[in-house]
Image (cartoon, rainbow, N blue to C red; front, side, top):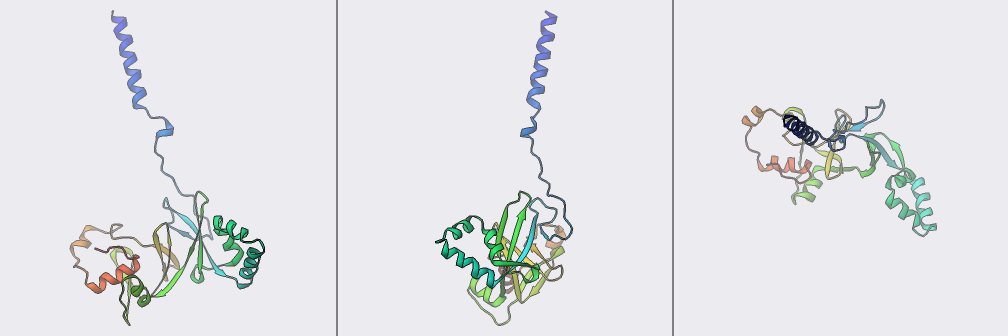
Amino acid sequence: MSTLNNNNNNDNKEANNFCSSKPDAFKSKKVNPPPIRPGVKYINAEDEDQMEIYGFTPNPLKTFITWTAIIFTCGILRLIFHWKPHWMLFCTHNQCSLEKAKKVLLIDHFMQKFTENVVRTMNDQLIYHQIGSSSSSCWSAIPKENGQFEYVDSIVYFENKKVRYVWDNDSKEFHKVRGLDKDIKCTYFYNQKGLTASEQKQRTVISGGKSTE
């Protein structure tokens, strides 16, 4: 009888161990970005959404030749470019510095490629387009570190996956527009006053029309 009880106890322990142990396939693993390569520009460096970024500017001759080929192929080549937009980027643009770029090519660690337009606009035009008002002296507030803002009279940015990246003249890089929920101490909020209507417009412009409250 005691032998039977011992066998039952051993079976229960094995069953509990089996239930408590998770197969490796079901364990969540954090995806680490690939190491930073020298000479390559990045956005979101060392984050899970790290991507390589390359700047491109239009080449009129390459653009003419490409569109001529599209016409001769009755639009078939354009259809291919629709599914491979980075191919059309290579066929119509030259690589350049990010500071002069009209388009950017983004490559993530899964080797997915994205082409995005770089928008350069004065703030009065952007405010009129997004908010419906215009002013002769408009400034936008670009978020910096420690809750500080830099006020500029023009904006250079692109959007990828509904996230806006703004050009920073100091670092010569594009940075993701972040909220005040990152690297900001609670004491910062206790010492702040409410935003004026003008400040709300300035910050709405840079955040792409999202709420700043």
